[in-house]
Length: 110
Image 1: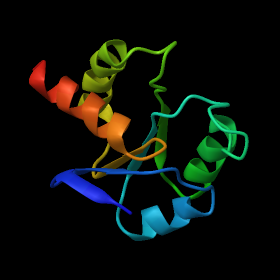
Image 2 (image 1 turned 90 degrees about the vertical axis):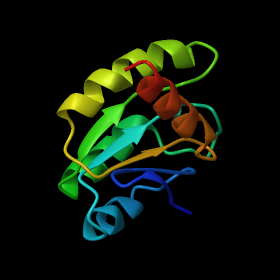
Image 3 (image 1 turned 180 degrees about the vertical axis):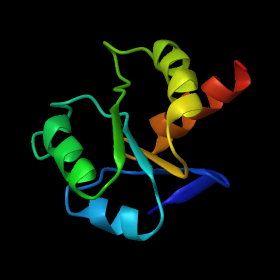
Image 4 (image 1 turned 180 degrees about the horizontal axis):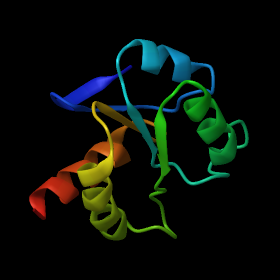
């Protein structure tokens, strides 16, 4: 399920490679993956998600958030990515919560 945070930024739970074309067809221009590889066994790896996103014509950024990747650091990187990525942007993680938190932190910092 996609949840819009504002007019050009949305979050979602785990996506599959086949969802990338659907996102492009829905008008998204960029995808941010906030989920570290290997978090769950059935989770598609970032490289596979990137290939699917690029094949669908989407910009792709791997910006994991987890124990080894603090949200504070991700928020700093996200601020820079927000300045360069075409919009609208969809960010995802397991449930969408981390993606929303990092976005809120990035927006609050600037």
